[in-house]
Image (cartoon, rainbow, N blue to C red):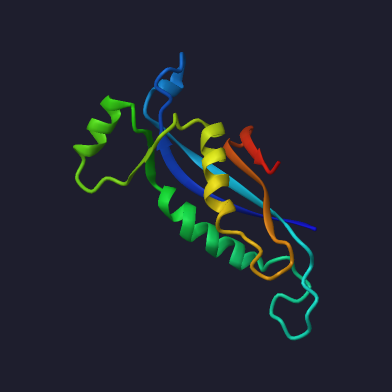
Length: 147
């Protein structure tokens, strides 16, 4: 069985080698779709009876381990020295330094790795992160999939 939870957050970035507008500092309203696979829990009296995982728990874990860290932050490539220097000059600025250019593809891949460690087989129902889709705009997204 597959279940999916969608979350949204705002973040800034830039793609320094891009030939168009994306080389400038800008932001997006990202949408994140987390798809989990697992067996339906069949245990009378269990709060998760009839579910793969409670959607509120899917959200809580994603918020704690990813979304709260990236929301309203500037996602910067650590090797983009002019931007890193600029962000460091801003007192208490929320910055996330990455070891890759913050494209939708790289962010989706990074988010998958982070959340894959979070959604383990918690209930003994073979729970696992199957797919993560990151929308940069309503019409453009990158998808990281298991396998």
